[in-house]
Amino acid sequence: MSDLRDLFAPELVEALEDFVDERIAAALGERENGSEPSWLSIEEAAEYLRVSPSTIARMLKQGRVRSSYVGRRRLVRRSDLDQQVVERLPRRG
Image (cartoon, rainbow, N blue to C red):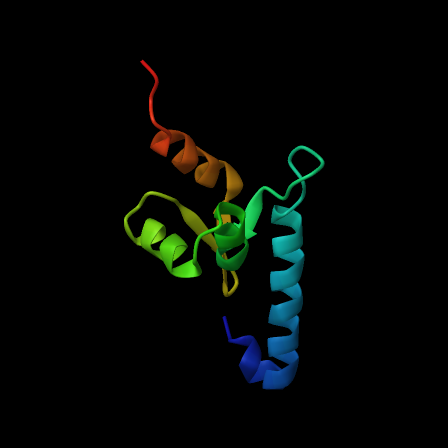
């Protein structure tokens, strides 16, 4: 199987890749409950938790949050972030 770059102009292939990335991210970002996207970019995840993107990167590196790549985009599940917050809450007892 040949690479698309062998058949088409690199600019066209890059434009197609960007288009596909956007469509997939949009599909993954469909709203779970009608109000919030279920997948967030690193920057969106940082805003959601009110931390820096480097904190999200550290959480990913430590395995505390999972991620998936869609093209060049790295996305995290909002539910994983929510779970991190719940696990860090002080327990009443």
